[in-house]
Amino acid sequence: MKVFGPNPDQNPRLAIAIQNAKRAAVPKTLVESAIARGQGQSASGAKLEAVTLEAILPQSIAIVIECETDSRLRTLAELRTLVKDHGGNATPTVYLFEKQGKVVLKQGESIATADEVLEQALDAGALDILEGEDSTHIVFTEPAATVAVSQSLSSSLNMEIASADIVWTPNEDTKVSFANSEEGENFSQFLDKLQEMSEVLAIHANIARSGVLSDEEWTDLQRRVNM
Image 1 (cartoon, rainbow, N blue to C red):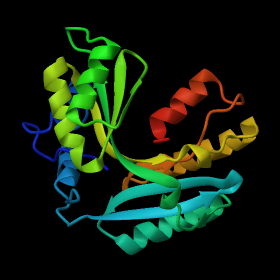
Image 2 (cartoon, rainbow, N blue to C red; image 1 turned 90 degrees about the vertical axis):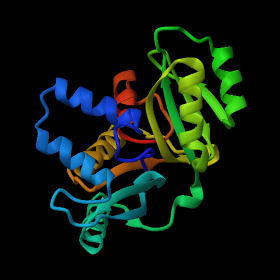
Image 3 (cartoon, helix red, strand yellow; image 1 turned 45 degrees about the vertical axis):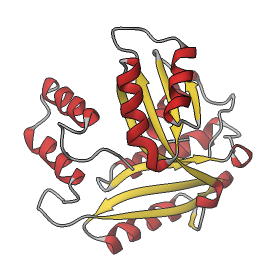
């Protein structure tokens, strides 16, 4: 679930995304469609509603799929069929996760040390902080505090907001890993199908890293799924 809202002036992440889209020559219609979704409307102007599907896939992989759609019944039917086709079944799974705000901060012109980020994050009300890749810091908060914490840290540390989302973080003792590369490939194919659905906003899973995935494969999985 994304935060901030549809106004680029009040949503630094959206403003950056629009800038990058323009540089990449993304068609204006696609940019406008994304903004419309942020306003709770489809490209045609129809009202969108939030839809969540919980499911268990083979190897006890728990997933939570968040969508926005103008046809709740159609989207749920498509998701259930896709899950079933990949050997899973729709069933409650959110009890295996914790709902949190997740803010990814990127270093700006002035470089903040890990200790400075930690101190400011705790003062702003963060629950936890991790060092990410490429000079990023990942801050976890209470869901309701996501916007306030991200804006506070961006200002006090002069850092860019790379992302600010509300995610389902898997409980450590529920995480599972792939036993072999075939299991990883099957899950990747499932993700491919999910991401073909324009209604899908976010995918959360209780996957832990195992030795069967290369660094490149793990990085790609992290990019596609909140874990």
